[in-house]
Image (cartoon, rainbow, N blue to C red; front, side, top):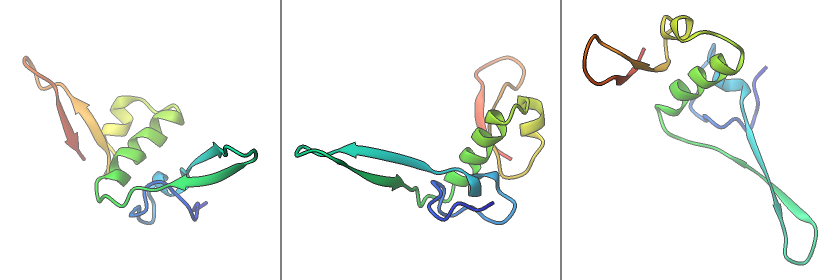
Length: 86
C-alpha cells in the first residue's frame, strides 16, 4: 500500500515509509475544522520513517539495523553512541 499523502515524500519503492501519513485535524475559531496532512521533503526523512514503521510493527533494533535505508542509534564499544544511516 502506498499512501498518496505520506509523510516522507521522497520514499522509494520498498520503503515502509510509503505507508505512513500524519493527518492533523485543526479546529476553526468559528466552528468546524479543517484537515491537513504534513509532509517532509527531506532526503533522510524516509530512512528515519522506515525505522519508525519497523519499530511500530514490532521489529527489534537488531532486525532494523540489518535492513538498508534505516536510521539507528549504535553503541560502538565504550563512549558515546552515534546515530547512523544503514
